[in-house]
Image (cartoon, rainbow, N blue to C red; front, side, top):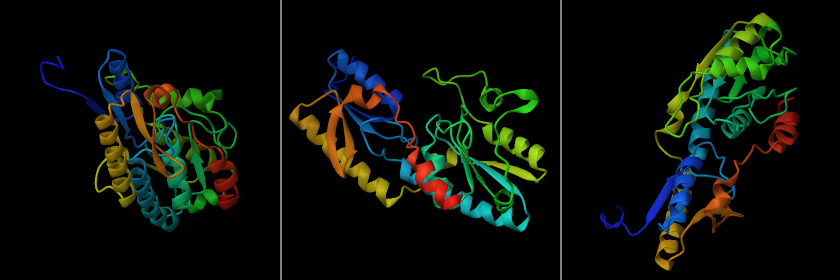
Length: 261
């Protein structure tokens, strides 16, 4: 079919699913080059994917705005962001926004309980005065079990992944029930995926695109362009999509912990 359409090569731009398809196509001798683009920042082999910086900026601006209401009304506000199972957006936006707590799927289960679904960053002055740390759900359920109930929509996307969302509302109910503080929830949703890209993302995408074009011109296929040590390099596609890049827990333990308490 590609021959009939006179397609000589495919430049796949996307996350693990899109680049995973590209790698499969390469196994059938289709000339493919991958460009890592996902707000989740969960592709291995590259320090950062383009789209991530923009999503973090949008989430940070939202948290800054939520601080105003949280402080003036003495409320706790839970801001649910995207990121699937990685938690990169919640952690970076939380640190940048000065929030007192972040809950991420890949964090430890005690101070940052593990939970499937979208990541949540909590922001409020009231939360600073509370020693509350969620460890279990209602009626003895673990947080992971309760969060699974909150995110299980029963539907899947085109790649078979469960549609996530709702952990923020569940967490807000739990916080209000356990602390007595009024708690509200805001879900940013797809607002994180659009709008004006940051300058960093524009430059990174351009650098990725130029390197991908050079790879095609040189006949180097089944590779993914990546950022390593500030330089654009080429790595095998299977390395990029082999395993998800989990959250760097040093960001939570060595940065967020001492900075935010």
